[in-house]
Length: 199
Length: 162
Image: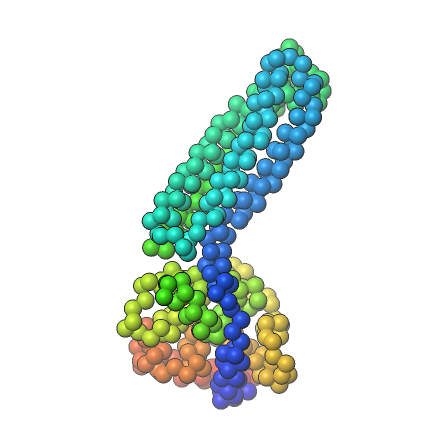
């Protein structure tokens, strides 16, 4: 192939492409929006899986609620159900709200204001989730223990290995929560930068 | 006319330009689509900053090529494992076998060039003058001339090998 042939092949390619106007207005605008929404795709995926796991456990607790035979176990049961249903639902709703900010139509100022408000809400929800997650061990453990092995942990003393397991769980939770929360901060920061770039 | 409409009209009118830029800097369809989307987004981002003192296509070439360079840097960790030949058979809608073969060869030669060389030869193939290439790339006119003659030599050597 000679240089002239390169040029002629390129010209022919250009002519062919000029006749192929495949892009529509919708595709072009979707591309721009998609870029913003992609930032939250991974986090939404994990949150959705997490939410389904929580909902499944909540359903299990609900179906076995009758086994909680004392008033304090029932209180623990209600707290467990609230924790497993309300928090994931709120996180998913907030994520949906952030993803749906219309970066093409709203004004920059309004978008940024809306985004920052929703972002703060999401981060606060995560903080609440982490705090309740730790406290949750104190009401989820009695509920699951009663439902699965019919043991009332308030009336039976724990063995040493159970204390060790509890401590290990707490430490693992600290690391996991720190990692997950940092991930959130990173994603929201990068989305905020995208929005600021639109100025 | 609304900004959004002006922008979409512009992209639709010059989609061939974007297609060509993204095709020379990527090695598979997935990357090309990613880069295409990134370029559209960058053009939207800087659309307000475009001043009419330059031709709109000059500005588009500049943004698209700069975006492609950044894109390549991000993708550097990934090996270029997809054979060049596969790419354009899948991407094109052309039925002409001879043309397809010429396209394969064309891209094969282009892929052997480095990032800067690719950009310069691309603009030359697009029919840009040295002055316009200098405007788009930020190089001086004489530098463009020197580099292009070197690239031509390199291409010629490559072509004799294949």
